[in-house]
Image (cartoon, rainbow, N blue to C red; front, side):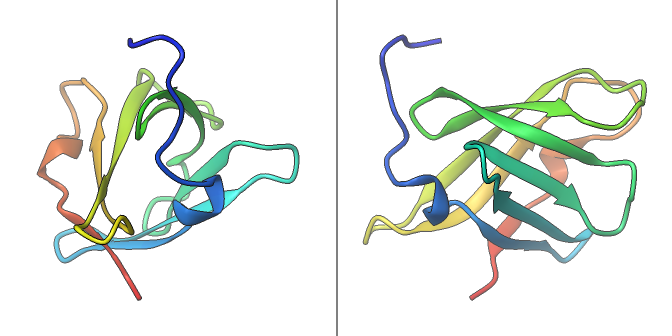
Length: 106
């Protein structure tokens, strides 16, 4: 973790729908009290909070009771500085999140 960093954009810039042809839609929204929420539309159990970790990487902590460990979500900006992609890494033996290629839906 690199200390004393901040996201490249306001939290609202990360909010939106991200789509994977293999999985479906994942929604990111801004919480009223600050921070981000993440919701995997096809799987009701996959919900959590995103806390800033460093730069454009956020720590994913699940808000539902399940056996998956915390993970990280990395947002990727395009050449104009807009958030265009999301990558998820939750190390576990059951579901390979790194295979999801998630692009922001306009």
